[in-house]
Image (cartoon, rainbow, N blue to C red; front, side, top):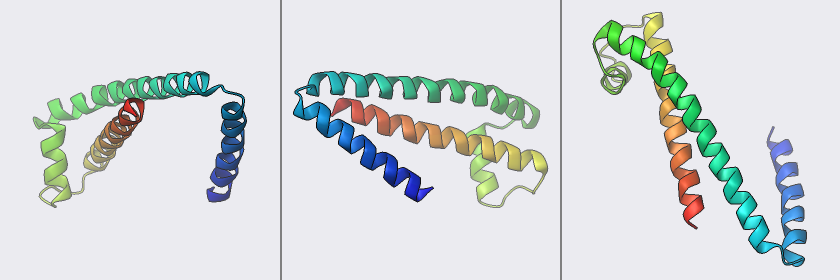
Length: 109
């Protein structure tokens, strides 16, 4: 996997270098911004789907996902299968929020 990523990065750098040498810096920046915006939208769609699943757990256990996660991580809850599923879903939300934040920061550069 690491080797594959390195190969992709090398190929991409080569393409970026060629585009920049031909004066396509504005087009490259515009294309990258569009790609970032697309990825943000994709993460938001996934988050919405996950939030619908989280809502069912929140209703079932009368607890917000944030509060549940805090209690679960600190060992205050048991090890029911629902809890592991709920925790995994909430971790995905946290991951997507982090990625969206990073991508939005990249757009501002």
